[in-house]
Figure: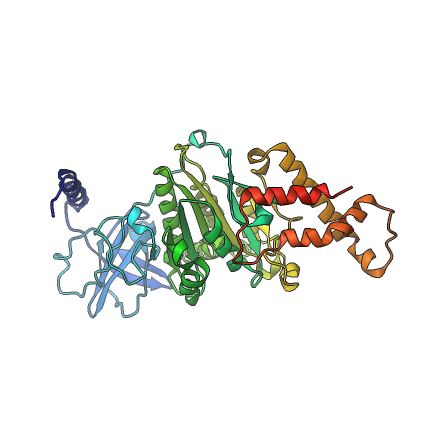
Length: 459
């Protein structure tokens, strides 16, 4: 097996970067206090966002990250469980060589995967560590950039994305580079809708972030909802409910970093984050642990600053050949559409799909309420004929929904309202158009053609 010169050069360059990142001197601090999730360390000043390693007799080395400081006290939050840690434990910067940290148990050598093509088909946690039992990658720092892209460098949204869902393609057309929120209460069909998007979307790469969801759902999503074929072009980042608040927030950030990297390589990416609400809840735990006062339903102000930062990271970039189309689920607690997280998400995102419990209870799937849903990019990615046809469909749907009580009581007189008469006549076809089995695929062009034929039947 021959080794090419560029491979040697790349390896040497990686080693050079690794050596240059090593500390010039060895610093250490001591764990002074543990308050909930926050670890207070004395004697080790660290910049916010930098990593640290905590070593204590009898327990494996624990990774942590700096989330704040107050004078000489540094506040850390561990990435995993801190069970067994003792007072006075030594704390080192994350890049301290292991040989210097003597006499303590080191953590299991689970190497993170660097962001790249090797991530395709893999299931990892929010720090890039494999969860699928397959080997990890080389020991590299996972980049985490919070810097926003210059808005004037973003390529415009100019073409539709084929989602494979007829109701979305025809009535709520999504553009490549758009960010959409999927708003729903619990048990209304979010997982089914996400599975349809994962399998059917026309994209080069699918990045899925499962933030704060049930642990059992991770395997179910990979095996049953996503499937083996879709997994080959996908990256799944899982941070289940029992993970630390830091790990849950990192799950969303890391997935966004992966999507951004593939976009900059000229790929069309679909990013799915389930759920944005769980990300906000994890950020709330971090903020409250640091002593931030709550400002709205228990959420501190930092939550409302971090959410736009996360959402604005994705979308189109400077490379017009690549894009990120993002879908974020938003859990409506008690089906309250005025939830503060839902409010800020609607204000930042480029549209939203509202899943109706009433439709789900009646067996209507996907349970998208087209009256309450909107795609702000649709007028820019479809022609005028398609746009007018979709508006006419919504008018007939809305007219039927307003008059259905009169119709059920027998109080409506046929002929008194031409739109209502047309809606009654087309109602079976309207319902058929909006419903779709989970295993069905309806591509963009046939979806628009079916919509046009349906509206042509209106006298």
